[in-house]
Image 1 (tube, helix red, strand yellow):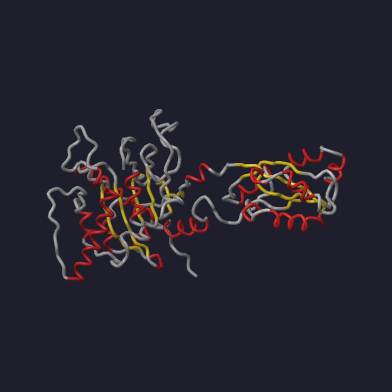
Image 2 (cartoon, one colour; image 1 turned 90 degrees about the horizontal axis):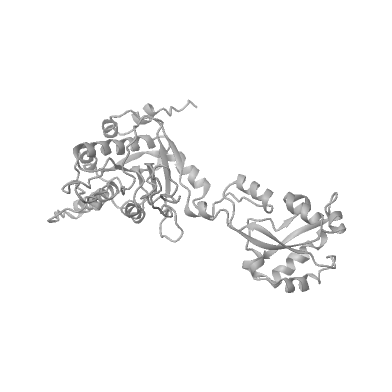
Length: 415
């Protein structure tokens, strides 16, 4: 099989001619960095305490059966990422040392090939020690003085094999089940990253170009958005291209500009207009809305926006932006992040973080950020992947290798 050329020139040459004509700047690959969720950043070190006991190996099954009979299922299966049973030699060094030095019998249990095993009973806060002791006394072979200890453990599952190994050394033998309870599945992130990595720079370049154009025209801040649809076989169709237009018809004196004209909202609106246009063609309906003031400024203002706007939507029967990809020069504000979410976008990639005003990143905003000099901040919202929201998408930060110059804006600006 011949080697597939992954150079940026070859990738661009494989695109639709209109896309090739739109790209006027030098394009080169960048680096895609998956965003961390709020849970990954805040809950990965949450610990609690569990009670453990130890029994001869031959008494392990009766002990586990006893626990299943006397405890609710949610307690028995409450920490599935931790090994229920652990040999003395598999315990972290500090627990091994602690238990080994308690009594002469304990020292014997930890010497040589042991025929004893440690068993997790369940979360300490949900168990009664007295009831456990009385129940365990009925198991043949257990110590006369029932062994029960409390140990700290991570209460959430590890998100990588490395993390599982680290927790096994510091807490208790831990399992990595190749999933991520705190965010998108690692296989999903890996597969999605692989899908977009070859051509992401093209769409980011188009967003970058209209950002520069809108600033030069005085329409808005140097911010841009590009929306594409990826089909089977990795064929990509350009769906929308929009720049920020907050200053058009506004002026910059004493106001923050028109928030409805952010590049994200304009791009999503252009997708919606294409869907309406397709519906009008099917029903032979051609109604033009009469507006005294176009709040969204969502008609094409730049030549590049117009060229893309004239292309019909490749899937006019779908729901708004369902499964589409959006490439942004800047991390969108909370308003635009929620618009992305509710439009059912599938993937979002942005270039410049907005640590004070952005809505996608989960890192704390403002505080201790070197570029903000102690500006007030707050918790990052991480709106790309939240369990309590009714839609989730995958998001990345994209780092240029230097082919695109930065597009700096005031950090107080909402993108």
